[in-house]
Image 1 (tube, one colour):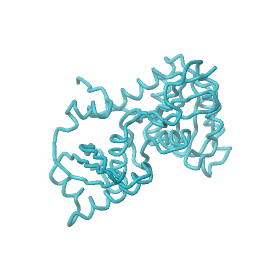
Image 2 (cartoon, one colour):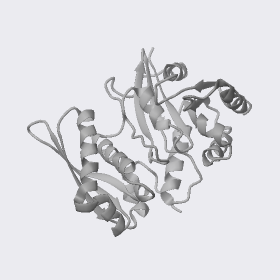
Image 3 (cartoon, helix red, strand yellow):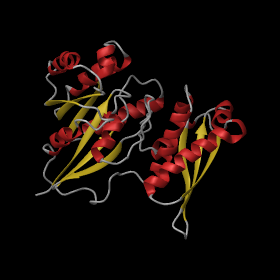
Image 4 (cartoon, helix red, strand yellow):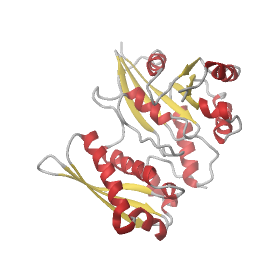
Amino acid sequence: MTHCGYCAIIGAPNAGKSTLTNALVGSKVVIVTPKVQTTRMNVKGIAIAGETQMVFVDTPGIFKPRRRLDRAMVGAAWAGAEDADAILLVVDAADLTANARSHAANDTHAILQGLKTHKKKIALVLNKIDGMKRTDLLPLVEQFHAEAVFEDVFLVSALKGEGISDIAEWVKARMPEGPWLYPEDQFTDISSRLLASEITREKIYLRLHDELPYSSTVETENWEERPDGSVKINQVITVQRDGQKAIVLGKGGATIKLIGEMARTELETLFGRRVHLFLFVKVREDWAENPEHYEQMGLEFPKE
């Protein structure tokens, strides 16, 4: 008898959800940066253990939204939890231990209150425990246990891959009976075009600073298969102001060239073939208010 189900991975921004997702899947299916709110949409990563197929749903960070895009991201995260058979709440243990009143702590508290209305199988993942003392972690574990929400607690370092197998076993045991939803060799539900856009957006987050990454989006406008087995990809980076366009381009086009080289190198590794990547930048002040962009990201467009 086969088993298959969904496990939503939720938490405050920058808790390490995407790193955990990639570790559980065993392949890079979602982008990762040190900046908060990197993930903008739900991305499914698929893993198989024996006769069980586990579909991990990496979700955007849950926080107090300010913009329309924020509201769409938070709504997507809660929708992913609602539709799941099991939930992993990921918490940055180091941050909570060092600063009990941080934004992440406040966001996590709000998420906990929301989870109390979910009659789901939920586990707590205390992440980023690298170098932390057990004496510092135990009070945190007791604090969360007192919430009476979690079936189990895992202490992990998603970045180093420590404790991942224990989480996978917990999830596997909670997947319902049923047929597999995806082919055996498929490891994500997003298209190659969308994955390529995400990889380029990751490089923008890694290379540019301040608010600019949050004011930009990337779209794969053209995907051309070539006779020699390579692929030509045209992408458009959309920003909100002319000054931002100048920053993305850089002096003499140096910045966009570097972003392109970084993205192309990773795409060639992911796709296992030569990639010809061409990047263009355009200004559209209202892109974050355009329903089409939300549809491309798989997000619902908030009415207000």
